Image 1: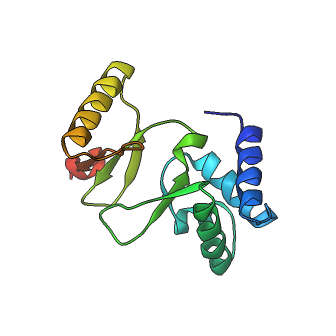
Image 2: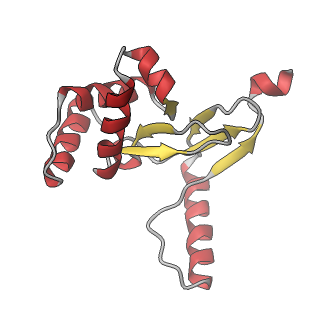
Length: 147
């Protein structure tokens, strides 16, 4: 994962490209997402820092438009947010169908290369041009499986 300073510099540049400022509120959200690592709900963000709900929503929209933040949908209604993959590292998600938890995971390099080949082959068969891939494994987290 890049250094925090590099993430903030990239965020400022992307916002500047949109004619937006890297405000204290936006910087705070990037700090929270950097610290929490992984897809988190707005409630989790607000538990980490006491931020006004309207400000969190408004700033997440701008950060998402700038390509700094990515929305991750689980199986429940609560959207989750994480830093954009190009600011962190390529990863996938484990999605629990019981509690809604979404967790990051990274596959070994050899498996990732094989997955990339399979994705490109499938895309070529449909004459589809890919810019990347996302893999979500859906099932039960360890806690829900134990219950």
